Image 1 (cartoon, rainbow, N blue to C red):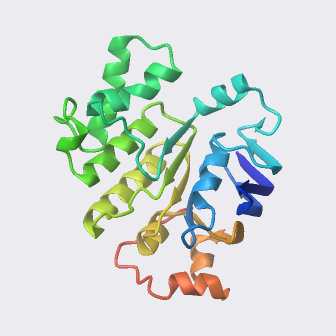
Image 2: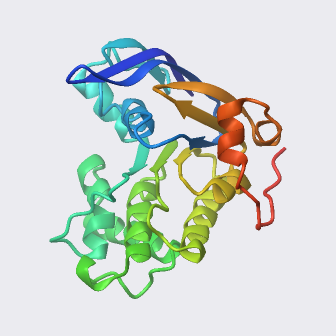
Length: 250
């Protein structure tokens, strides 16, 4: 499904990713942890075809991104939903217009079908009745739900959520993570979630990866990750008391 091999990305001679390798099997819900500035957002953008590495191999859904044409990448992106770290919503659009946007841009569905699918997705994230609301009239947590609805509205094969709980209170953060886990349970999407909410992320993930200084230093089943003796992993788990019911994965 997703294979990254020896990926390097530099911005103005600054190392963002340096030798990163990762395999994500179909149907996995991979939680990604790591300190600020370690390259988590860059990794997400590489997988989505939004950033081209200076070195390495990127294979997503059978497409070699380093060799792909613009048309190949666009076709791949039709099967990828991405919730950006800063939401990246269109401030001049309503909730419904934001959620409808990927359907209008990436599909040839009719106006009626676009509206039906967008309204259904808005309802699924608990925002029924907010379709015509402007973004400056809703809360931060509601904005995250709009961004999640937009990322999911095309029923993507791959869903990437880049820090969807940043800045949210614990209750709202938990609701967002539960929604993401529910998407995985109800469908067959492969999901990558970056979050600084360690307890919440561990409670929904089937596998967990720790990204450190531009590369993955540990990636395991969640149950094994929790038992890791790696120093950097222990640093992240030290205060991660899990107050929530754990998800069970076969």
